[in-house]
Image: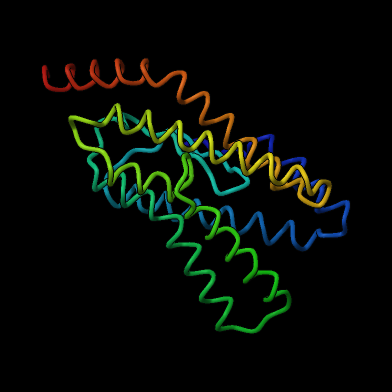
Length: 205
């Protein structure tokens, strides 16, 4: 499995360093890595093979081998793995006293709140998408949910722009989410064809 940090994180970390938040930078990076570890452990638990892991401002993005063959239960468990890991850090931060504990707890609260938002590709959106879809309506459900996610993420981005420069990290995150959803929406038909071909090959063998 390959690991990498997405370039969109670099301006955000640079922002924290400029405003004197080096300790915040370290806590944020640790929190993102631990959050993603939750997804990785959940994936291994349900037997899903991971091709790569990319660390992003809101957590991360896992690329799976034959994800389209995974069951709803498998995808649901993997989607919840990250928030569960963050929730564990949140509880530990609230129970123990250590230097920077207030910042640590705040980061976990923000990370957990953002990831549980019901929009793609966030964990909350993944959970809702899995729960809503059926085998017959999978394509339609995902298409509609992607449109909804585009509207919400773009609206949030427009809202945060009004509060620049303080809201720069939020603008970058929401704009990234909007772009990701637009790309996913444009390529959804190709993904559907690929999924159908993969299932046919699997059933053949």
